[in-house]
Image 1 (cartoon, rainbow, N blue to C red):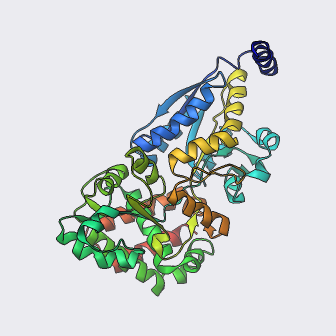
Image 2 (spheres, rainbow, N blue to C red):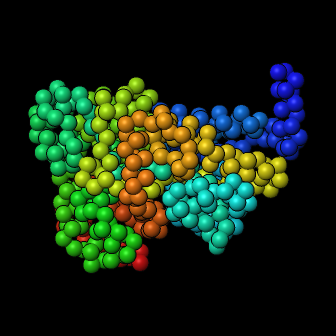
Image 3 (cartoon, rainbow, N blue to C red):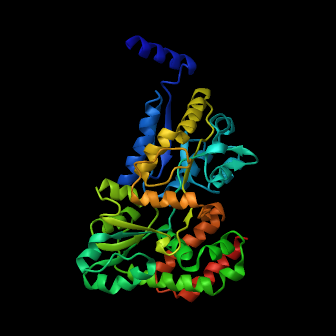
Length: 409
């Protein structure tokens, strides 16, 4: 047995460059909450096990804070080895400027085209026929997370959709609880608005606005109803004074708030807290009204480095991120769905199973990041931040919303 292990080690070492066991790669990302850190640790552990070294460069404050730092470093001549962006157009200008490593050879060798699902994820990594990023997960923001104990203590059933949730708010408030937890950052209110759009207006309206770019529908009654629902949600979140999304999630975990609209990454926080899906908390995809999920999420890009050994390690890391074992370990901790359908997720919890069922059914749509420019996304986030923090009327917010989308055509 000892001889077999020695022979295996020799075969592996002879198949890799001599530097394969000694290359340090700095990785920047914005995953800093408890659940996120646990998921990142799985990536680092897998990379370190190959003999290379993951040098963690976490940037606190979320993507809105981290992305400018990452972009500044890359354009300023101080690139990291790998960096996180969301699926879509966030790194497009960097790719077009020739600052990102071409991963097409890795993708072809690993068969990504046949394994990554939905295809839109790899499409988002593709520019002029070449592949520049490694997708790692599917994150969908259209979820309502509920504290079962809040409703048990009140003595009413746990809501099964957004309408029931809104109807239960007076009893929740009477019990001294916050109906809706919401962090004080524009992207969180923008996320809540996007989830309400799918839930209240439906997928057809969402597609007409975001895919077909039909501004008549954007200005129509269906979207008026969405802004009215957002105004209702704003009232429910009035007593939520936390800043970060995971702080809002913690209000639900500690039963101080009844619910939160947040992406499926919230699962990581529930898991770290020892909460059990379906027992301690309830998750409602599509806010319980429309069981559709957007296929947003995260991908990693590899800035060009003037170092052949590091470039070889970058490509090893890219292949590793998409490998079956890493996909399982990472996504089970992250609360997200894998980007390939040939992995074993027998350990998936109740909420992940709901997501997998929706993914298998084909009830999916691209994320806004994949359809609108970063400038439009920023303006929409700023609008929602202002709307949720002020007394701006639903009518005025709707008008500005249409103006922002129209300007992005």
